[in-house]
Length: 257
Image 1 (spheres, rainbow, N blue to C red):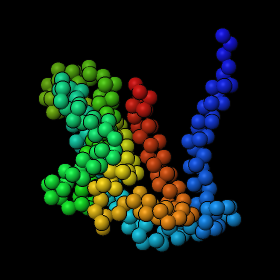
Image 2: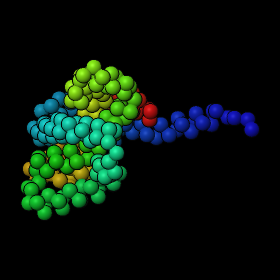
Image 3: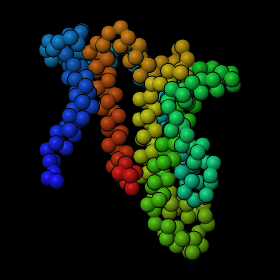
Image 4: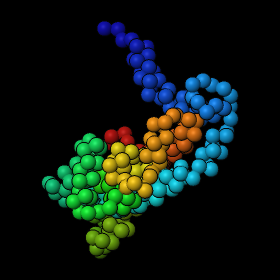
């Protein structure tokens, strides 16, 4: 049967157009010189100026930044230990505990965490959001670190042990430097997932704790103004930069190797 590659290219192009055309429209209309996004009026940068003088938006962005940094640091430490344990030891229960938050739907995880915090009488706020983000970010970091360990040359560790290094010294001097790109990539991924998350944050946030996705959601319920487009463009740019850096640091992980 004669192949028709143009059909494949056409289908692929239509799929990518469907996925990315709305994002392009969001970026373009962030420069629209009109309060409404109904039609293009002209080019302007005033909506970015309005954005950087919006105290509520800046406060929400600061909250997202703090939560993302705290969640990424803690989840990176825990995820690295979990990934190393899954690689080094034959533990049946640990992979289930680590990877379950990734597999279950976000809405189910958000409701479960909400019930858990209420049972423990933990006030909903910044602390509950950070704990919730750590819960689902640990698994992603563990997967990246575990994949990085799988591609490591074990003979280097064995050589260090033969030369008299203890298990801890071999890990600190040999294993840790080799998997550091994977650890950094996992940390960047955790930060990206945390700063972008809406569903889990929606269930675990308190009244006075607003993150950037929650603030954007509250604004679009009234109308999608170019200010929303502007903050969405900046958030999209930050996410893309972090993803590119993560893929550069641990390329094999994202190619499925």
